[in-house]
Amino acid sequence: MLLVRGRAGGTELTGTLYERGERSPSFRGAPDEDAAYVWVCDEFYEVDSGGSTQTVDGRTVNLAFESPMPRGFDTRDQALEAAKDHVRTQFARIGLDPEGVELEVEKNEPGTEA
Image 1 (cartoon, rainbow, N blue to C red):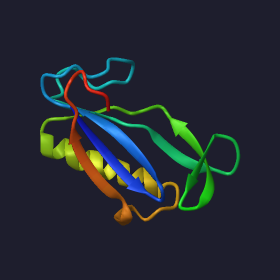
Image 2 (image 1 turned 30 degrees about the vertical axis):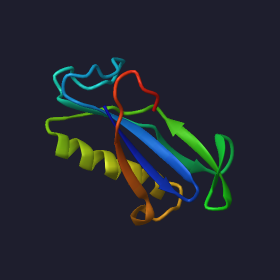
Image 3 (image 1 turned 135 degrees about the horizontal axis):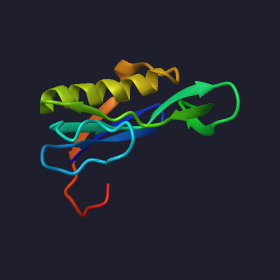
Image 4 (image 1 turned 180 degrees about the horizontal axis):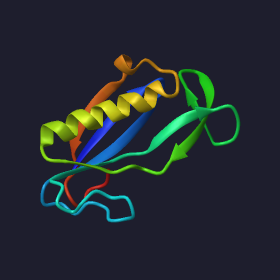
C-alpha cells in the first residue's frame, strides 16, 4: 500500500492507496472488489461551530468530517493522480492554497506502522 500525505498550514492529511493484490477495506460503499487500486481518505470541511478544532496556518478552524468515500481505479497512475487531487482539495476546503500543499508518496509495507 501507498500512503499519500499532504502538508500545509502546519497540519497534514494522509490517505491510503491499496494496490493490486492487497486487501482493501470492505464496508458499505467500498468499491467493487475487482478494482485494481483503491483510494481511502478522510474528507472534511470548515464549519462555523462544532466539529473538531484544529490549528491551521495559525488560526483555529472547526472541521466537520464526512465518511471516507473509497474510490476504485484501473491504473496506478490514475489512482495516484486522484489521491493527490483529493488531498489538495481537502486543504482548499479549509482555506489553504491547494498549490501550496507539499505532497509525499510513501510505500508502507505490511506489518509496519504508518
